[in-house]
Image (cartoon, rainbow, N blue to C red; front, side):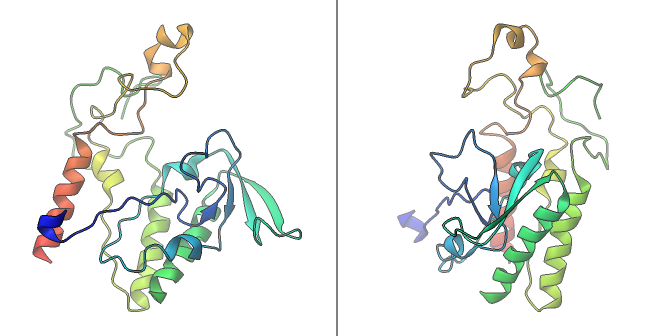
Length: 214
């Protein structure tokens, strides 16, 4: 963006901390292993940035993952498989925050065929995980007690109203749907990602407004 003397970069680090999924072209089909107390490999790429926007949520929803104490190359590293719980997420955000200081639908129905947003005030989606939000807010609050101000916008809660804005079945799938799935679009609709353009444009507008008025 020469006109604005600005550079925008996308950096792949799905768990924020180190993991065996850090290679953007080779991260599918493997059990998640998270080195929850190590972030420097990624963080050294961010140190010269004027503004950082972090996104880490969906990858933590795996039913099982493995925590790693030590390095991937170490022969005496300790591995522990854990079920889906908030503790690994909390531990990783603690590592992230320490680095920061140093520098409503019917059962069986989903987004398929939805065409209107939700207009009810205070709506909280059934798939929204309030506990994970609390963990993020707690980590940020801890940073503030150390004197580091972090602005936090809960776009997950904000975006829940747009149940009509997911790609649903209208996207390219890594594995083509089976005939059985095609007969039941609810079974394979993508209700996690967002259409472009769409909801992400609103995120950008909010961010732009914040930047211009800060």
